[in-house]
Image (tube, rainbow, N blue to C red; front, top):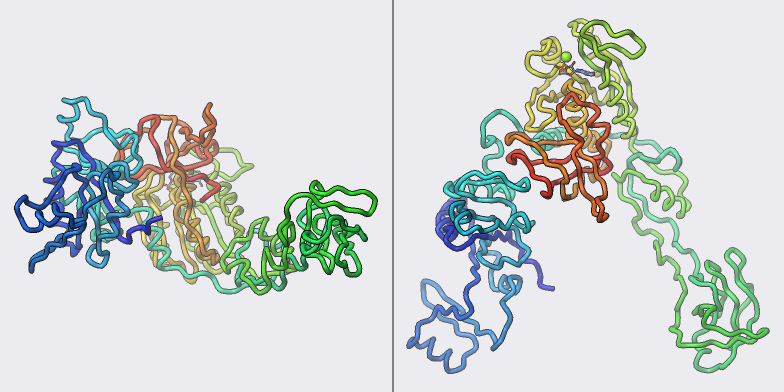
Length: 590
Ligand code: AMP
Ligand code: MG
């Protein structure tokens, strides 16, 4: 395997006549102006030659030099002859010729079968005239389109303007993680991205200190406060991996038949020493008797009375589990910051560990705000609805193993809100509310948050969602979720949940996602990132695909209940056609 080249590679794919080289010519000075050193690799026709007939270098190459290095004060070029009948050059091999210290980015033309990210350039008239298909529907390596007129894409993919090289450069910089415009969103609409909101919150958080020791049963789902190393070897003694006979491998060459002198069972070892010419009947997990080093499967033996014939070839140490083979004493087993799962409890038990140190439970207080909210058990008055957020939030927090103080509903009344906020902040590490954070809401919530704490009101480029209040209320962190039931759940899952996990001291809080085919057409307006509700299922061929739950209004809570995943569609993309590949976050992976 070739070592991967340590700099980003970005390909450009297009039909000839699209103006790819002209575009690259415009991108290069812009990239240079950003302080980037850019290298360029182009695949060419097989007879390509940069030399000129009659020149010394040309003549000597003709005469048989396999490498010719032509050098001057301005530049040098190495010409490497390939052997007659060579295959097409592979990109990984060619990249070895480049010096990573002299380049930040490699632009690649051609090499369309290599697995590298690429931008597809399209000139619509050219494609229509010649009836040429786009590459990106089949080529998952295409990360963006650059087209001369807007099109409806078949999968969610950024669409750049082919005639706006600065826009393409911005995209490349962001793709390289060098976004210079991040602090000022490109379309200055005052909205921030989900990633930015997560980052801002993360930057202002520190995990709670304080831990407690608890039994394995009580540690399930909690976060380890300190790393665990193994106090013992597992296995703790040499034992058999098979049912068969324990022997000494030296005997295999010397003896034709061995004498069976006893048996070893799991938990009942053979007492005494096995001498040359002897064997012991042994069961899986039984301790290997002294004098033996190998186990022969019973299927490869013939036994008559106490006499044992061994068939076939056997390696010394075969079918024997060595001490510490699974876990060696003093080796690391689980890191601090690990949320304990079922297998972890089993693993700890296998080491004889009965108690572990876990972070103390995070204390979370929550309430719903709104005059229209009616508690369960009461009759709905005109214009009233039941408080569903309270229960959805209860479930979401339950999954996270926090100490939850559910404070019910607070009326849109300044005194009640002030008292509730103060009370919550006094008992909790985190206060979460729903409702009352959008524009035009009963302004008391904002007014009192301003009076009691430092709260920012953010508009997030996500749908459902958008408004979120975040800040500090006394010693507590404060999250104000939007009121719409789907928005409040989605905002919780995307923004609050990773923050709580971080506060709980968990080390790995990134959500995993899948790329899957959608079997539904997905309606979307460009602008905000959509977290549409989806159902993961197997199609007739057994392939995992995703389907929409249907209407996606932020008040349609049944969509959230039917769903088992979010379909994440990037801000820039528009409608997504059936069959397109989309990003999916299973709820179980959040
Ligand atoms: P708000 O963010 O307070 O303006 O509320 C936006 C929408 O969500 C309104 O239709 C509210 O009635 C609804 N809503 C607010 N809080 C809740 C809640 N706890 N349960 C159900 N719906 C709510
Ligand atoms: Mg309200």
